Amino acid sequence: MICRHCQKSRVNRPRGLCWSCYYRPGVREQYPSTSKFARRGVGNFCGQAPLPAAATTAVPGSAEKIAILMERAQSRQSLWHPEDLTLDVASVSAAALAQAC
Image: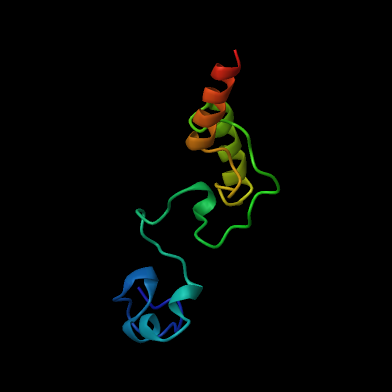
């Protein structure tokens, strides 16, 4: 095979690049990995994801939370919002609810 970037040298590095192109600054980032082990997640997205528009009050591990995570992954948003409900907050609110009854 011939290098995907320079179209001159033989491929001897990952991503279908020759030695010179693979180690030249900025070139490696232009070509995604061709390894079958590198393709992970929805749409093979590895960049910085924007925060979701709103936090969720779904309890971690619930079917509702999993559905929300799937929606966020499909829309290429960050899976976790800083204000999402956590197990710590859920257990404190459950304890407060039990005391009120």
